[in-house]
Image 1: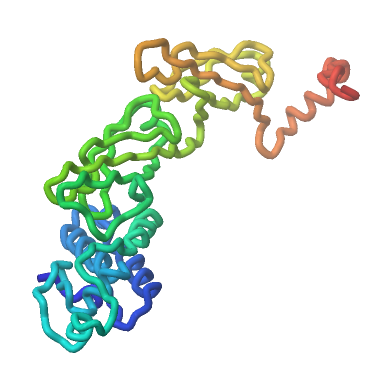
Image 2: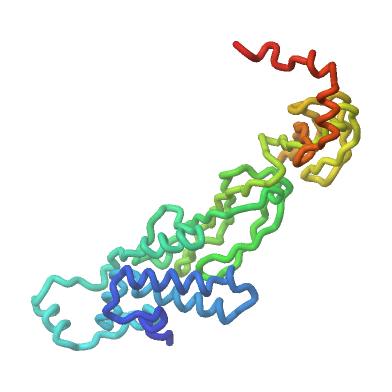
Length: 311
């Protein structure tokens, strides 16, 4: 038999609903399997506090538990005679039992959404379910690394109930795209399980930007490379490549690397990588360079903003 849910969450039976939610949040963050990999004790503790919150974190279930109608596992107890039951059975009130009224399980879903990015697909939860009904779909939000979304990857995600899902992230995944994991949702009795829908958020990359299947990068070059040209190494999503900088290249010059972008999910040509050059002067300045510019007669005649002022 499970422990008393109040003891599991470390709150008194007189605790307010907000106190119970706060205690659950604190413990759930502490013992969630994602924060305690390869720690079965933490996983068991997480399941225990989740089960406790399902009882006293729900208004209707908490009332039933406090009245002794359900036990620590949430199972119905046999009828027990007491004065309150006697009054209810003899017209001393309008209490109705056994109708499976909807409880306040939305609170539990909201907390899981806040902690772990999980929410039932329909945004609701129900205190009573037909045991033969199909389980609910669950919706998750998952952050994916930029390169994993571009190239594809395998990810492990721990659900609030402690289950671990293996997710195949397809290549060319778009930000906001939703992945469907069939049959991995909530299971109710003998009914078919629901599905899991994973909404993807792609993390920004410090070097790469994406536009459809094309990849954009900004490559810093020296003044010498800009004037004389040369070979530089440029990162791509498939690894570093050597690129030729043409002579007299300006900041803003774009070099196209054909086929170095993202491959489409189906047949078709891959995108390109666009390399935008940016001239970077020596940090802190260079006296020799300054002296050269002062003596450079051609620099006085050069007017790059001829058509800029007064536009």
